[in-house]
Amino acid sequence: MKFKKIFAFLLAAPLFLSSCIMNNGICYVHTDANKDGICDVCGSKVKVEPGESDSHDHDHEGEGGGSVSPCTTHTDLDFDGKCDVCGADLSVPTHSHVDGDKDGKCDICGANMGICTLHIDQNLDGFCDNCGATMQTVPAGSEVAIYLVLSSVGTIDGAPGTTYPELYLENAYRLNARVGDPLPGKDRIKHIYKSADFDSWVAYEGAGAPTVYTTVPGVNNKILYAQFTPNGTAPVTPTPTPGPDVDTTTTTFTLQTNFGSENWSTADPLIAAYAWDDSANSYTFAGTKVNDNSYTFDIYNSMKHVLFVRAPQGTTLNPLDWSAVWNQTDNLDIGSSVTAKITSWSSGNQGHSTAEWVY
Image (cartoon, rainbow, N blue to C red; front, side, top):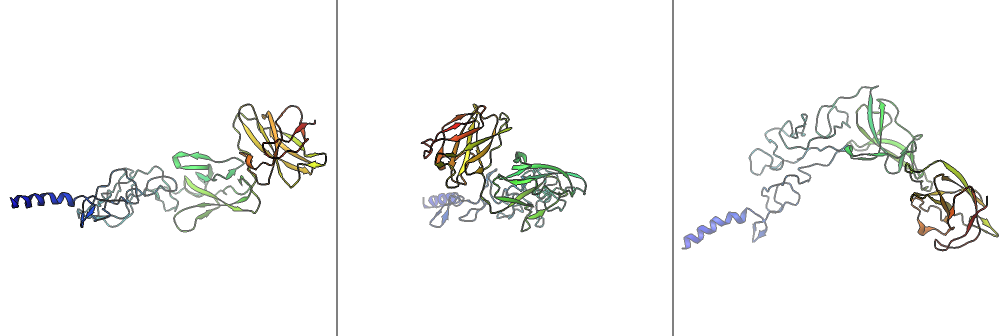
């Protein structure tokens, strides 16, 4: 009987040893938090489920979006000559994975790789930075497509950028130009808050400091990023880009701020016109100070109603920060009149000052 009990224990022991939580020195429930295929507790090889993402089986997306090498540190604990994580043939010398035929496997060692969806050669070595595929360098004078990332505060020729989901880019502009042509400069690239000026176009190529470009580079699908330098001026809130149902031609309106011995212009305020149409479109237009008694506003012709607000300088206008408003008028319907006048003073955005059209 004693022999049978010992034999049963010996048969059961591997079951405890094959899984891994430490219990009196025995690891029996494996833990692989970093998903490197190696138990963090005892070092045993463990299974990495397909699709799990970590620093070994999927590197980060490149600047232009394409998958790169899946395993940078090979491990072969079972000594079968293949990486326990990605299956690479370890009989070949250390190398960078290359998938020139785009079959999802390294051409050198057979390691599993994600299929490259976008070839990019930012270091101009003639090979894709993501998968190693051979790329053709575009000669001077040839036309290429360049993607200029403006960021959320940049515009080109007054328009914001767009989204290119296939490239994982937002707020970008596709430029079709010839290699060697000058890239757009300060005359075309603007900061929407006017508190910074365009400085340069850069590419992040993994060689330390960003590379600055002044002319169109000789490679298709190059991605360049706008850099802005603060100019020391206070931010100016822009009017949002209106939709196609908004008539953006404008009419100039005037607000007279003096009434009796009082004046809305006291304390150097921001005075603005909040206007809206009958289709839930609304915009806030900053006033231009003509003198201490009057301000002008260029308001879209499709707007049907307006009220005027008095607020501290720097108040957000689009959307309007109503909590910062010092004073506001009652609503005025827009008709043929273009000049309004403040007729009484009242504090806060709940108590309304009065105003009326005068001509």
